[in-house]
Length: 600
Image (cartoon, rainbow, N blue to C red; front, side, top):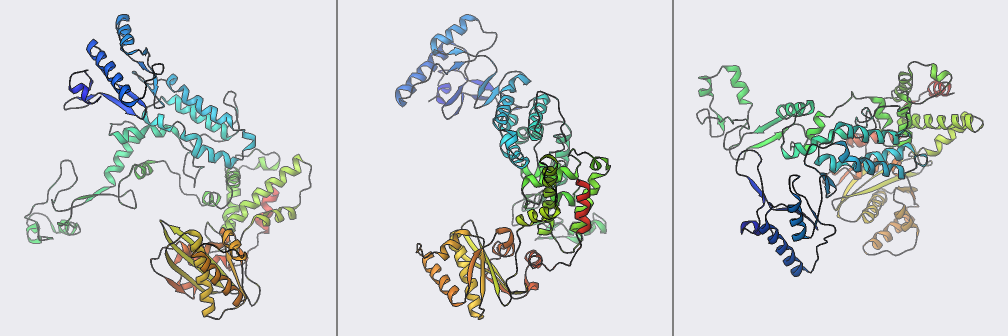
């Protein structure tokens, strides 16, 4: 009804012209129960709007809230004109700026005052949390996913002044370093340096970079270094596959003449008449597919399909890859531990005594971590050997603080015990015993499973991967255990220890509970095989069950079985090698002793 009203002449909508072409008339904008109606001022138009409002209320049974509705009119309008609108519609006049769908709208260039509500909302969310009750890791989670997502929709719709971004980033930085925004204090690192990816920084967001989002989506012309870099990347990483119309994607497009290409091949004889021999070799490398449509290829993505995310990743600032930072942010330790070690290697921890005398703290601690990592060949970032020095540094820091502030006695044996308590690793079974580790995975309804059997010396007996079809996670876990036990039965393997990382599955097997079909049948077979093979099942942490987890997530497409590490894939094979604990021996006394002398 409201769309047809301007066409029938009941009211005149506003024309919006953008670029060449005919103007576009915008009668209204609507979202849920919020509506903006655009109209020119006239007595007949106001009467038409009032009639439409009344007709809508009588048909829908809904009543327009006059107290929450308002009208906006030009600042050059007279008092009589404002009174006419108010009397005919019953609304009160409102001025700019006003908020619609959470975003402030204004006529002129946005000022800092317009975004005071966004700043106040972010500050209120921060003050709601007590920084003394949150660990640095918990603060990072809030800053990454919760706090910095609050103003995103406003920053993408509008283009705030730089002072607004500076104020928002200062609030986030003060929250991270437990400072007050009202008083001066030490911020151990600028927010811009925290912005880089997790491998080199902490993965924080620089809010001012999001002002590129909306102009990029709407096709507006942008200016500045970021836009120039983005344009250069788009040109350098865009290519195309020539199809049946034999044209390129240039502006204007270039066409391939039928005289030099035909029947799916280049006409070399004709090319020799126009270009030298070295050009002909380059032309022959260009393939044309006359039976397909032209398609654009974006080299900035592994899928070769263009996306704003991949385009932004090409121009986002990056530091040179650092092996130390990859060790620190490996995801296997709590964020608070990673954040502490990151501060330690970047000399962001205030300490007194001999530690403050060192002039190269970063290189010193980094050299300890690198020496530990390269003390044995074949290790990966995800291996437990990389986690050990991080836990040692964290427990040394905790013991140092307890000795200084709680007057407790510092003992190296206590630190070692505390580190060993949080270490999770695969352990070899007792002599003359075998250990079977299984796991399952369900992705998009497709269930797969994998498992590894090893003897008491850690030697691989067999490994398997199996497809289960459309199954639930718990059913897939049961089927993986059942398949592994059946393989052991066929090879007459007794004295078996079975480990899975599903606590629910272990409880189901140990209990005499009858589950739903077909899980009850699978559980019955598992219990029977465990009894006949003199076996038992127990729970293991996921981190120590990595080999079977990698096998379950292999997505090979067909069942697979092997009896030697050489048959495993490179990724699974390397991880399996390290879970056996076959790394050469190393002397860590010098490394840990050096850290002890520094921190004390």
